[in-house]
Amino acid sequence: MSVDVDSLLDRRQLRRKVTFWRIAAFLILAIALISLIAYVSGAADASKKGSHIARIEIDGVITDDYELLQRIERIREHDPVKGVIVAINSPGGSTTGGEAIYSALRKLAEDKPVVSEIRTEGASAGYMIAMAGDHTIARYNSITGSIGVLFQYGNFKGLLDTIGVNMDAVKSSDLKAEPDFYSEASPEAKAMLAKVVKDSYDWFVDLVAERRNMDRNAALKLADGSIYSGYTAHKLGLIDAIGGEEVAIQWLESEKDLSKDLPVITWRPEQTENGLPFVGAISRSFGIGVAEGLVGEAKSAKGLIPRGLTLDGLVSVWQAPDSAANKAAVPGGTQ
Image 1 (cartoon, helix red, strand yellow):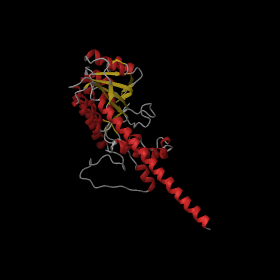
Image 2 (tube, rainbow, N blue to C red; image 1 turned 180 degrees about the vertical axis):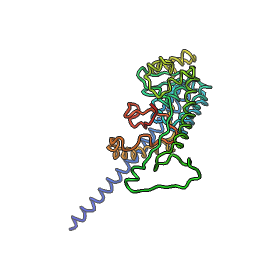
Image 3 (cartoon, helix red, strand yellow; image 1 turned 180 degrees about the horizontal axis):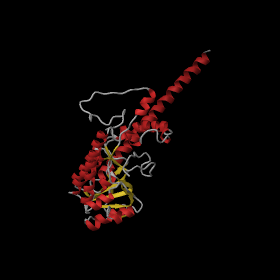
Image 4 (spheres, rainbow, N blue to C red; image 1 turned 30 degrees about the horizontal axis):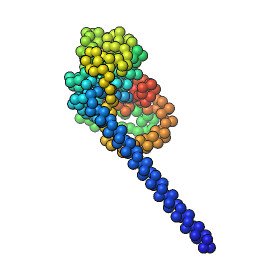
């Protein structure tokens, strides 16, 4: 009996030791990871102290991105930045988001030379942003254009009728909160939306005419929602040159007298979109990875949810399902 008790005690002691070393190993690994991140972040900050070309990457659906606007302003105020490359890979998005980024880049261009580089796609609001550069380039097969605006709204009246749900409202006027999701939009509501869309569209066309130095009627002909390859966009005067980042650098060196061999440094967000410090965001990323794994199959059920549902208000976005640049692109754009 005593042998069994001693054996049990030994096993308990062994488990305590194993648990202790597991915790110790985890803490050591966590400290090492945090130290590595701090070292890399510090090295990146140190590299920005020398003269360089700043790269701003604008990827995916465009929204009203406050962090990006702040980052652009920091670049403008940072003396070691001698030039800027705006690398765009976006089908478009919120019209107001594109307008805000465009304005911030034009302010930046008053102090530093800015080149826009359209990568896989820079369409609609993505093209709007590209026009903010002093020089705009794209690859031969890049997708650009899609100049236009749209306002999307859903209508679930048929579904509500099927399940026996009746919606009603008391309004101060007929056009208040129109269109709604539970009844057909009235002709007056559609006319109201058409006016709003036209105001935004006219502004977009004027911007194209101004920035691309073309007659407004010529800009209007190109602003029918069509997309263009980089090759065609170049022929039509919507971009300045064909090429990638190396062409952007060559232009900065030849036209803006930047020193050769300046390093190109990407200015990344200092915080995550939810304001978490980068180190803290690592844990969040694990959770996101698990969640994405759980809903991965649901993504294949195309058409169940309107793709434009996640963008409110006026939208300037080219519909590109499963595009190489943005496999979860939010479509609903003018075509």
